[in-house]
Image 1 (cartoon, helix red, strand yellow):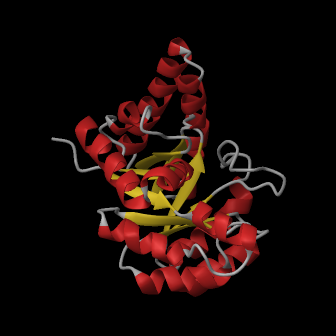
Image 2: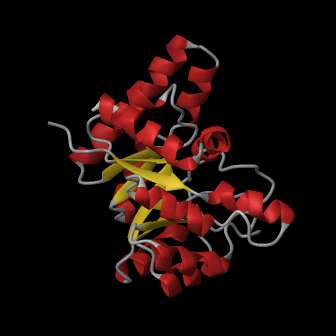
Length: 246
């Protein structure tokens, strides 16, 4: 029997809406509390260098408001490392970050950035923070994660999501197989595989059915659906689809 698949909900875009107007509403802390109340397994938030989503003060407020583990997405910079070490989230997921991008585009080049990542990964691990690397489902990147000693990888599912949206069945199957193959290889080598990016009600189940994947992190789509149905309903529906896939 497959283990229950965890759902981490990214609340960045609640903060995006708040920041568009200024002030304090809508509060991402309230979103975190709702996620906790309807069976979410974790909160994900990306503290970007330009602070377009959550702000520094949101981190402690989220941690104080719910017992759910916080997965802090962060660029591999000294500034973000210092913030992670100060707040000590349950997990730190290292992601690529470009100021001009609208969202995280592609996975981290863990292979090319190996020497830069070594001290950051080591300091996070020494502090007892679970390190995750957001990478493409690619054997070279997975090998780099293994050499870095990362206990977790999160596979970028954007190419799969794009192919599914385009109705390209061959590309969808090809990308799904890449994710499944890399999840199996990660698990075989003692790395816990997660997945996320671009997952929706329509495309989540084939990814959720991959038995080695332990967690899905989903944000933008759920916040978008919440505009129409409410966050409670959106999270519950995603949870039901994930459970049905297992």
